[in-house]
Each structure stands twice: as C-alpha cells, then as structure tokens.
Image (cartoon, rainbow, N blue to C red; front, top):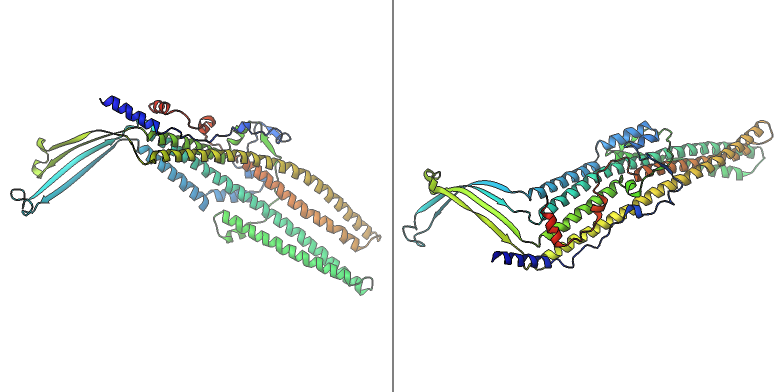
Length: 492
C-alpha cells in the first residue's frame, strides 16, 4: 500500500517542475575572434606577466609602495573578510548534510490546584528529572543538500579569486598613479624651463624697448608667456600633490605618507607581447573571468538544490534518556525513556513557493552566465585595447622623438648663428619654444605608453595562477530531467 502511494507522490512532485529551465548560454572564449586584432602582436610561449610584474618598470620606490600596500589596506581587509564569510557559509551548508546529536538535562515541576483537580492529583507538587540524548538526521536522498554545499563552495572559491583580483587592481592602480606622478614632475620641468625662457625673453624685450629698437608689444607677449608658465608650474605642482595624496590613500595611509614619496626615477615600458595560447587559456589567468566562472558553477548547483525541494524528504529522529520523579529512581532500569522513528513529508500545495524558488534559481544562473559572458568580452577587449594602444604609442613616440630631434637641431643652429653674430637672441628663444612643447608632448606619450604596459599586464591576469572549474561543466546550463538528477544525486 505504501509503495504505490509514495510513487504517486513522487510523480506529483516531478510534474510541478515542468516549464522551468534556465535560458542562459555561456560563450565559448575560443569562439571570440582575436586573430586579426592580435595579428601584429608579438606572440611568445611564455609571456604571461610575472607575479611581481611591476618590477619590470624599473623603480625600487614603486616596488616598495606596492609591497607596502599588499601588506594590508582597508580594501584588502574587506575582500579577505568576504572570503572568510563565504568559507563559513560553505561550512554551514556542509554541516546541514550531517547528523546531529545533542544532550540535555531538564527538571520540570507541576502542582494542580484542588479547585481544578481533586485529590489525589490536586494540591500536590510533583517534579520530574529528565536526562536525554537526541539524534536527528535527514538523508540527502535527492542530492539537494550536497548541491547547496557545492554551491556554497563555488561562492567561496569565487570570493577567494576576487580577493586576488582586489590585489591586482590595487597594485595596478598604484602603478598608474606612480606613472602620473612621474608625468607631473616632467611637466613641472618643462614649465620651469618655459619660465626661464619667457623671463629671458622679457628681459631682452625691455632692453630693446629702452634702446628704441622695439615697442611694448614684445614686452607684453613676454609677460603673457611668463604668466602662462607660472600657471603651468602651479598646475604641475597641484597634480604632484594630488597624485601623492592618491597614492597615500591607496596605501591605506594619511596624506602625510604621500609627502615622503620622492620623485620617480626613469621608468621603462617593456615591449607588448601576448602568450601564444587559445583565448580560453589566455582568459583563464584573469581573476574576474575565473570568479565569474565559479559563480556560474555555484548557480548551477543552486538549481539542483531547488529541484530537490520538490521531492519527498525523510527525517530520522531518536531520543534516549532517563526520566524519574526523584533522583533516587533516575538511574534505575524503570526510568529508561525511548522515542524515535522515521517521518516522510512531501509538499503538495505550497502556494507556488517551490516553483518561484526554482524560477529564482534559474534567473540567478542566467544572471551568472550573462555576467560571465560580459567578463569574457570585456577581458578580450581590454587585451586588444592595451596591445593596440602600445603599438600606436610606440609609433607616436618615434614620430615625436624625430620632431624633437629636428627642433633640437634648429635650436642649436640658432644658438650657433647667435654666437657667430649672424642671429639674435630672439631667434634662439623662438627656436627653444617648440622644443619645450615637444618635451611636454613626449612626457605625455611616455606616460601613456607606461600606462598601456601596466594595463596589458593587468589584462593578462597580473601573473596570477588561479584554480578554475572545468569551463564546459561550469558553464553548461542545467537542463537534465528530474529523473537523471535523482539518479546522479545518489552517487557520492
């Protein structure tokens, strides 16, 4: 009698999941075309960044700043706390799969009034002492609890990877700010040189006006150039101060820490290169992509856990104890108390709670897949952007350097003619202006090229070795039938 009833209940539970399936489809990274974009890039068998990729910039002060930051900042502390929280949640999910055993000691007394119960019950106080051990266990027949545990493990692994991503983001932000600091100092040098040139031009103009060789126009132009140079110096100094404050904040310190940062030394950018691997392997070093993949894995197990709620649950409970009205009889054989047995339950009508719960799990999976796909596309775009920026900036630097060399030669010719009495100081000062402008332009291009090198190292994962789930299993939508889920749930 019980077997047909149980089978009917199981079939009723299975039918209630019909029509609820996730819609998300994960992209295959190797299907995202990169051949033409990476065609001109240097391909190598071993060009993933080193774990300490910032050392390639060649500045010991920068190395110390990043090491200081990685030792601990509020942002990293928060990321580490999220990891511990996720690990604890995984532990709770694991504990829910296991049996529990608890002990208790209880004393209870009762006296009924005689107005309610006449003697011999009423008017007499009675006490009971109880010592007991209770056992509870709910077998994971359909694998729902195991799926919840795996989902929590996936979230914990994603949090661990995101903690590494926070460190990569922090180190790259410090490196970029440090490059901006170097650029600000270079801008200050150019502004100071322009100030000297304009002051020299102003003095020369005053002499020519006094000698009757020129009018006030030359003086006013020189005064304007001098004031503009003052503004450039003030702007460069403000950028230096602001960048120092930004670096101090990234270190988790106050602005006084920024005052201790000396002028950066000459930074160098390495040649751009991309590992000669498939797109999937290339992006497998990206913490954001790997974390998104783990969240897809977790959401997949969340669907399995939600489906298991539709099936019958079995609860086993038992209690063994001693109970007596007096301590003298508590440990006698007559005081033994035993209670227990199995219980089976199945939701028949729940107002749509289970279906909505499964629909929510499907939506969470779709959201995780969409986020994973978005990370894949964005990651390849960042690699391509960094490569293309590096190539373009290398070409721009060559052109700018050629222009600067020509301007340098023009200034030298003007200086030679002046010393030979064939030219004037005005010619020399006029020839110096484009030279200073090109120095400023070169400083900006070098800073952009260094930023592109930093961005490429970050886009390639910053040298992190990350544990990732199988890309096929982790991104495959859960479309198996309930019967196959039940069959697989019985395997360890």
